[in-house]
Amino acid sequence: MNRPRHFNLLARLLHWSMAIAIVAMLFIGATMVVSLQHRVQLLDLHRPLGIAILLLAILRLANRLSRPTPPLPADLPPFQAFAAHASHWMLYGLMLAMPLIGWAMLSAGAYPIVMVGGVHLPAIMPHSPVLYGILRPLHGVLAYVLFFTVLGHVGAALYHAWVRRDAVFGQMARGERR
Image (spheres, rainbow, N blue to C red):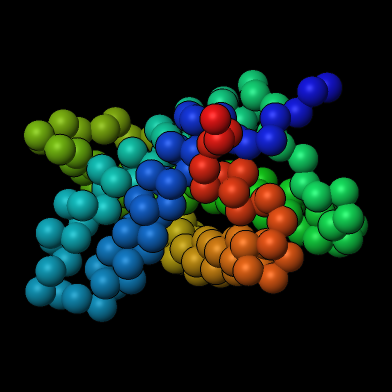
C-alpha cells in the first residue's frame, strides 16, 4: 500500500479542532465540579460540546478508517510503536465513550439533555438511580484517563518534535509542502 507522508486535510482539521474542544471540555468539566456559582452555565456548555465532540469523533473515525495514514519511523522501537497505536485507539475510544456515558448518565438520572436553542436529546437509557450511580463516577474516572492519555499524547508529540526530530509531528501539524 502506498502510504502518504502526511495526514489528509480533514484528519488534520478534525485533530486540531477536537484537541481544542477536548482541552476546553476537560477544563469546563473540572471547573463544573468545584464551582457552584457557575455550574449551570458550565453545564450549558458541557452538554452541547460533548455531543459536538461525539459527532466529530464519529466523522474522524470514519475518515481514519477510510484513508491510509503515514507510517511511523522505521527505527522506532517496537514498544514505542505499540504505545503509539494503543494510545491512539484509546483516544478514539474515549472520544466516543465519554459523551455517550455522559448522555446515558443524564438519561438514567432522568435529567433533560438540553442543547443549544432549547433542543432536547432523547434519553438513551431508562431512568434508573442504580445506573446513574454507576455511570456518574465512571464518567469522572474516564475524564481522568482522558486527561492523562492526552498528556501522554502531547508528551509523545513533543518528544518526536524536539528530541527525535523526525517527521511524526509534522505529519499532523502541516500538509505536503509544494
